[in-house]
Image (cartoon, rainbow, N blue to C red):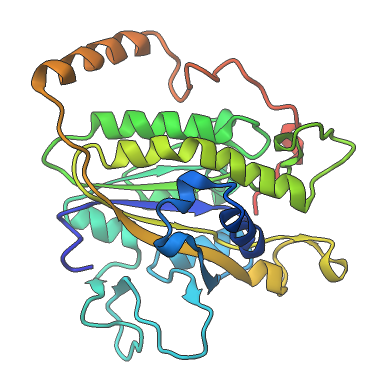
Length: 313
């Protein structure tokens, strides 16, 4: 990572609540082609989460403790690590920093650090919802990005495209996106489902297919200027009745076991100056008068699940 930090843009995507077994099945069945195209060998890596719910897990992830390989052979070297005497997972290739968290460390290294929130721990609607986004220089959240929104990821990707388009040419970007679409409630992503059907493993899978349909735009935006080192993982899984359990913040296999991948997105070929100028002007015109935080294709869409159904974990 010492050769990556400074030369690459960085993208960290947490697919909040995504179960490993569902992610693995969909990749094997060809149901998430845009994600699978970037997974090493077309497969997710099986890892263990550092926490059983969003807040705990992200406190660890954003301090450099990414999900740990689910293998007893270790220690497992980390990509990023705060300087800590006696650490057994800090290796020569680990990027070591002297702050308590990764976003502030990258800001100190010259990065613009941006958070695009999803679940309630990133909504800045109270002290608790301000802790994690407060680690970044900039944070963005709007109701259409939240858990009850059927168009949450589209809204998040639209904001990411705006962030990338505004990025100064000479400054690297660290973008963090907490994807809320898989978190309960997710029944509305399954065709034919109703509120009465509730959430299920099948609607969880349908939500991942929804994310896959739009994630190519995020990857394209983040590789439009320079190579981008991307990390895509879950922060924890969730139970749908296994052994009588529902939800997360519990010590169950389906909660602790998560999918993980990291890979490099090559820089896109630079367009000619004439071609580059025209879409830029058109985009500026399209953005005129648009309310902050909205996607022009989805701004009028509203959630079919009530906001009170949102669980921040």
